[in-house]
Length: 301
Picture 1 (cartoon, rainbow, N blue to C red):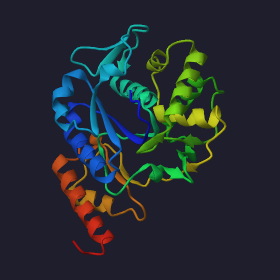
Picture 2: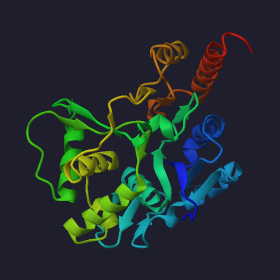
Picture 3: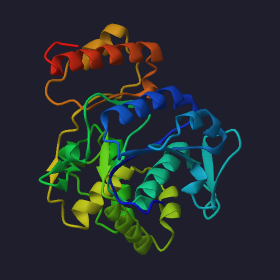
Picture 4: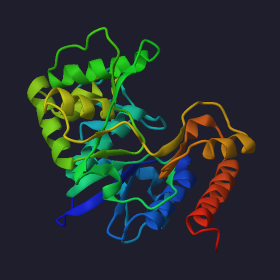
């Protein structure tokens, strides 16, 4: 995709219903990240006109088709896809987004790729070093965090192990690798996808698209720990304020959430699935960011 090696690249799959959120994310990337960081936004073809206004030398708008094989095509009027290699079951939209994240990350020439969904914004200076320890990219891992109350997470890990040819996870609590934002090494992604093809005997896109349960972050973490033998640098902190429940927040609740976290906060994620009104979210984030700026500058403007 690119001949020039970059330090950090940001990748966001999106679509028209999230265009306002994605616009705010893009503004925050341009504001808070170094000028050599590019933001790659990948959207379905029919949504390209909605996003083209964001395009500039640091924001690259891509068509989904750039990163999907011709064997995977979208069903008309549905957020569902068909893999001609295995037409049933259809490929759900969220699985397709994960295929795109993996494909973009593998294609980019960068030291690290940062996966960021549309419903996240950055609120303070962020660069490659933000995700490194002593110059090494840190793998997010939370040992024992996948407990019986998270059956979906266990299924995602089991799927990852199957794709990688690893033994099925035992009954104990397992390691969680899901984080927002999520930093990957492209060279590791490329090696991981080759491993999936070697194990399954099929193109990696088809192997993953055939899974009913899948998490790209679980796959990456399981590969690093289970195949590579671990990462020399790890972290259990996302440095983010997160709200992933599917319940709308009132203005006072958004403010309370934003002010509830002490320490380093680089990004805020309020899930689009929460149904929190855009105006409520935008106003609270603006007030929060301005307050942080005043605090960092010693109360002066």
